[in-house]
Image (cartoon, rainbow over all chains, first blue to last red; front, side, top):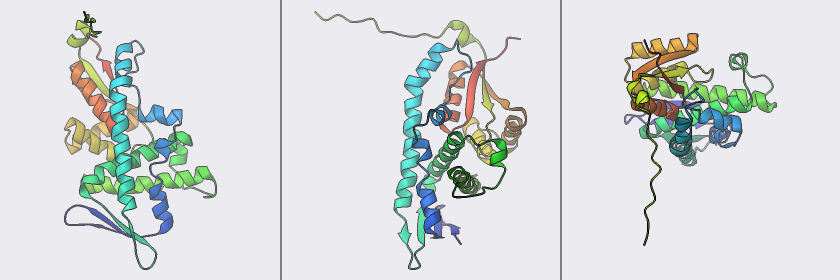
Length: 161
Length: 96
């Protein structure tokens, strides 16, 4: 069972992390980088529903979206770096630390992953309220990933909130 | 001799600057309620109680107006909310 500990400096230490769980964490960045147009639309929504706001929509695309793109990418890369620093225990499990200053970046990356998975697999409200069934089914496996990322996000919100 | 080209400067309509603009946050089924509350507190400076009230309004009614005022500030808030992956838009508040 995974052990999670908040260190005195506010960092979060994960221990006894099984390989399978670690691999699910390592795939946090993939959904947001899928290139799926639905994912792009969700991660970079329009700032106005008024189609007559052409200037605003154009400015947003050329000025704001590149900044958001960089912000989201930086979060995903930071998470990947934290995971790459994981070390193996004698029993084969892993341990790693989320530095206090990286918790917001994890929150962003986890949220990106969940939003992207929901778009890629078109999960409905009903899907999001149920447990996944056959994990050999890619869609059900994605639903399980969403649950894991959501639980971790909820927990990190509690830490910083 | 080099000539200077006239820069293409876009200006905002004076009526836009004079109007009151609202920041609207829209519901989505994926963002966690606790996360939305946290972001309202951080970006908009809401108390925990006020943040939860607006979060529940988004959840139950599909949208909540979380701020109103100048267009420039509304755009800034929408940008910050997008940076936290919330669905936010600005719209001109109806004239009284």
